[in-house]
Length: 165
Image (tube, rainbow, N blue to C red):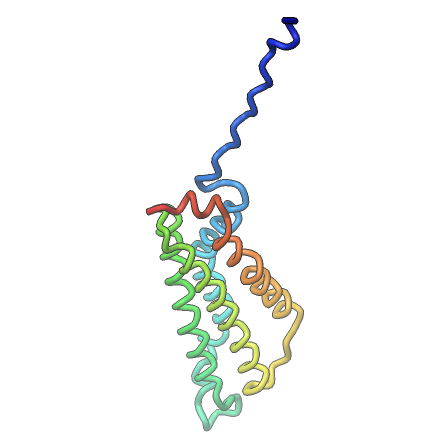
């Protein structure tokens, strides 16, 4: 026998097991963490003038009264409270690696997009506010979250191997 025939074929390197918070999973994690940190400040900044002029905007006798303004703001407040509560819960689920994160993350993305769409429609129809480029950008971001991250959470091997509790 020649020396060439005695050589064994190279052993293939084992594929690294996809688990743990790494890879593409870092991006939704960062999004959830940044949302938890910055959402209260963003909401305060966004609603500062509303709070300041609340009585003028919601009192029927005022020159600045806007019919149904109060209802639209209440809708935003309830929607944002649910979203923020979900964000905090997602932080817990991420770091404790709970299986439930898949469904909660899907709810978060779909509910956030739904609130955004309803808010834009309400503001446009009831308050006669125009949809601007910032609204469109946020809408595209929400659609991206629904059409990219939700399926990723349901089909990803890394997600399945990471969230096992």
